[in-house]
Image 1 (cartoon, rainbow, N blue to C red):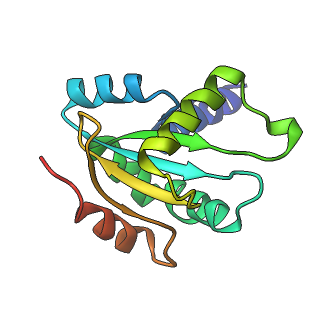
Image 2 (cartoon, rainbow, N blue to C red):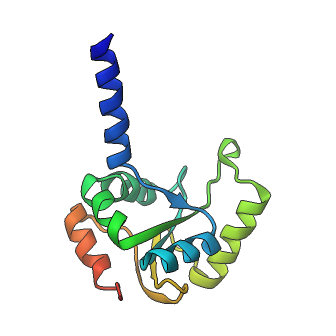
Length: 146
């Protein structure tokens, strides 16, 4: 029983250390960025149809290196555009994502990664690149401002 409890505690700690929070509302993201003195990563994703989006998620966003780096440098904001009915967003969320796309992704590129300052001003953008997590961090770091 003690072994199960210890294992459970370890799993909770690991999940906490190697997880991240993605906001879905830019106003909340900007408020957090202002409070925490961070920039914002806004990612446009087609989570259930876009193969490069899925690769970006798995290879970069879920990597331990990116999770560790992002905790100190970014507030994460996701605008997802799923196509499958089972993954449909609420009407309110779809409207928020559409508005973000009008402003930051009028060409409708997927995936698109936009680096914003804490006020929401665009500093740069990129897409999925077949890079290691550390190389991708170096790439997005070139857009960072203090």
